[in-house]
Length: 221
Length: 224
Image (cartoon, rainbow over all chains, first blue to last red; front, side, top):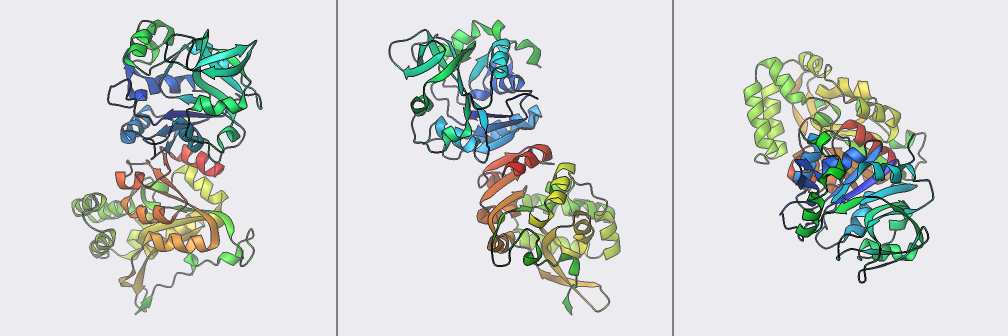
């Protein structure tokens, strides 16, 4: 039985920096929607919850079509709240640890599988990836620990927006970016994966030049 | 003329083994029936048996689209279907398939699971017997021979929800239709169910969760 029983995917945002006018989880890469790609990586996780907001109907229809028995959690205040709020809604009434991730990621399956396999109860962990863009949250590391985050002065690694944390981490929150909230819980162990976040058109171009990493062909229909 | 005598639907909250009289219990679950617990809508099933499918479909579409208030719609449906004898209707109703996961959840949580349906008490009695939990329904009037003579009350789901809130600290409502909106309005947690069809936008807009099948719905209910 895998350790990771719960996963929360935040897919409520407007994705306005990418400018495709649809939720980023519905953006297609090589004919595969990011949402389908992410759910494929979570096939062993029993309880997957997808937080919806912007264009929720389209995301719900896509989920119904994908046929995976996920739970949809609504964040009606997606326009005025950060991903932090989606994480809180997503893990409400849960106990123990949960995997939290953004819905706009492309993952190299093998490295993500290693991250999942290394998750242990009561041992928080953040996924980091080699720095690719200037507009990232850079991780300040000491050995295998992440001791800080910053937006200026790139370091070797950026945070992947994937975290394995006790659900109590999101009990009381403000309305800050997730990494600001997590600063209070540092140091946390960092675990390197290969991932690409799709925030901007530039991110998209970069990811498109590495599509062989994401094993999308198997999912294309 | 007097109200239908249906003792099987009666229920006193204080008899619950988990409850202490005068003290609220923790969480109750209020389920819609048609298309949520049952895998088919009951009224179209009955209509099909009577050869009145097109009439019933038109009414259903207008009601689902919010063009006819549920109460008026139910009175019309009742007028169409009452021509069939009670035994015939019950025999159709009793054959309906339940979602297996939801049925199992209700059986395991009988004392805090409730069915809140616009359907008529006398028509859905076989299902009440199968599930073994309390039903809140529309009610019929009968004559001394047990024949249905008219409608007594048409279910307003917020009324049932408010009654449940008097006995439970928290109410979780599960449904798939327009007439569930008032129940979600009263409930603490609303779960729109995409079982046999998608839930209307109006219901989704007042819900906290959307469950895409019975299995994930019950997994969620077990964490609440």
